[in-house]
Length: 329
Image (cartoon, helix red, strand yellow):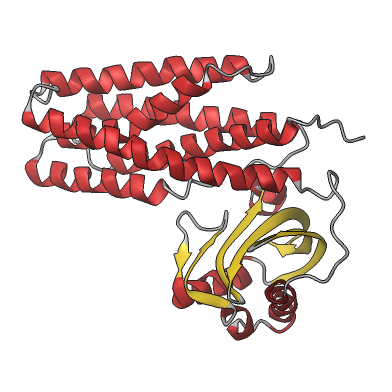
């Protein structure tokens, strides 16, 4: 099928993936909350809210795939922070046997989801996307209102000390999370703009660390030894992939990341289809072929490498997990 992307296509896909990740964050946060609440009615309502986030993420992912792009079904880089906020509220709730503390933490996270969807609803979306975003905006207003009403009924309204602290935490969370997620969105837009079918990769020699990474990956896939590829990472490096719900950090994290890679894909050969570079960052477009779950599978993806002083400081591995569906079904 011929390439039909317009100039603003990359921006649209980046926005859609940003919202997919936002809903994935919420699904994980609600899961933590559901493990902490004690009232059956509250649990049933929260389970319904979680299901709405799940369905929305899946609907947006289908829209992205329908445009020939890759759906990023990973939590945001801020996802672990959101889960930590919820886990703290859950621990207090279990200790005090008060569901209100669980809901107070949940409102901190939902406040940012509501704020972002409200802001994004003002964009000019394509006809197939607009109803999803508007429906999400309405859902988030309903979620937030229900949680707030439960808190008021439990004496945790905004006029109470706990309520005012929660409102301040919500504002702070939104203030912190939005800029970080906006920066991550820029990376996704850069990736989409630099797909092999959109631009030509440069013919000049690549950065030394990029070539070292390609060679080390080839060696890893051939002999299973992770030492070489692990040695390329800075001690404070971050590694993320759809295989793991949370990023790995540092040298030990890099070793876990690549050992997990070998366990997930015991027989795999990766071909780098193109490399696009800018100072301190490289995007590798690749195709992998191998046996997964007893099935012969081919999947495509992108790896973003940030580097400094000839060491990798961040690695972001992106692929649409739906490509592996026949192997993991």
